[in-house]
Length: 261
Image: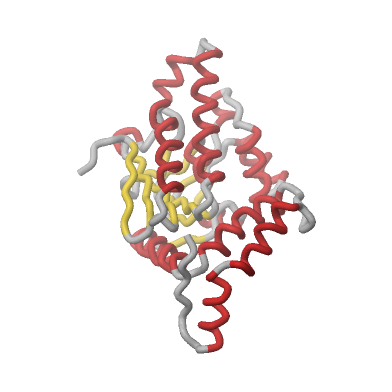
């Protein structure tokens, strides 16, 4: 068994980053935040990787946030605090910036910094045993602007303020109703269902998927169809092999075999 607190594996076109600190409910240390960014970038650079999954090592926790003992050690130093805060933001942003689909597979506790990681992912699938909270108001901390923006985009301003002000815990059913997560599965089915979804994505046009990720981000940011970068992405589909294959497969009533990477 891998004993590293954070590790990357690749199998069948799926990269998995596993948070592996079960004795601390997968609390994240500074080194883990920094490693997260490196692992995401490695998965993004791997031509064989089509989808990235972020998960905890077992069913007890996805991630319970920053390591409180480490935070106690830096509480009086703004310089040290910024190193941690920048590392947290960098880890979250690397997930959002990954050109490939990123799925948070959430089981057990998803708290604080764990929520920030989940917010950076494209999709969040949860087990029924998942438990969520955004606790900075219990600790005297402040979420980053990027995390707050992502939270608001998912649940709306009023609900985001409720979760931030109260720091109250909530379960997977409420998270689904709020729009914070996209799917809920029975605990025993979460891993299988998440991998099955990744297989579905592997059969789709990777050009279309990655374009959809970029365009959806641009849409949220207020982009326009007239933007040169958007026109280039959309027009590029007509010069690629995937469209020709997709149209041919449709006319022949067979599954397409897309090749773009």
